Length: 169
Image 1 (cartoon, rainbow, N blue to C red):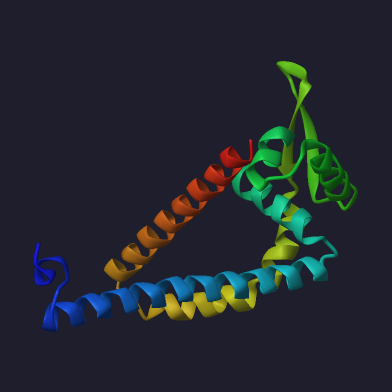
Image 2 (image 1 turned 60 degrees about the vertical axis):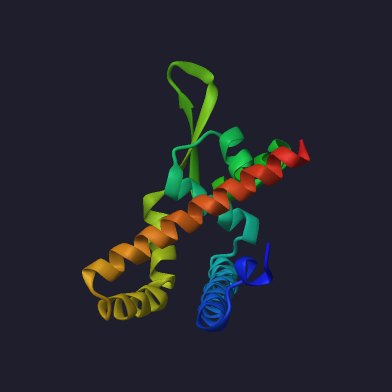
């Protein structure tokens, strides 16, 4: 097969390079965003005196709860014994409650405490206000595209996390 059939030449090659560059810029942007959000979350966690892993667990509980301790441990990738210590600290701090399931008294569901969540939300006000300003500059169609992109990225991250967990077993 001739070389020209395998690789684009001229303007097609330039377009391919330009597209690769754009894709790499998007990935680098997501990486930079991850770093900035991790630093922000660390500072918020420090302000409310929670370890990073405790704060991550609290976020999962408030986003996806009520949730069982074993499901939470799987979701954040920690051993169940470690999860017990995390939940003890969160409960002592008044961040969560552990409720027995009526149909199975051995089962426990973890729930966030809404009044305590408001304290956290206030710490994110500057970021949320900035996001409101940024998103206000986009059309509804562009916002829909952003929402779709972020959702698909989250799904990809979840899939990659699950794959790493399976590979570790």
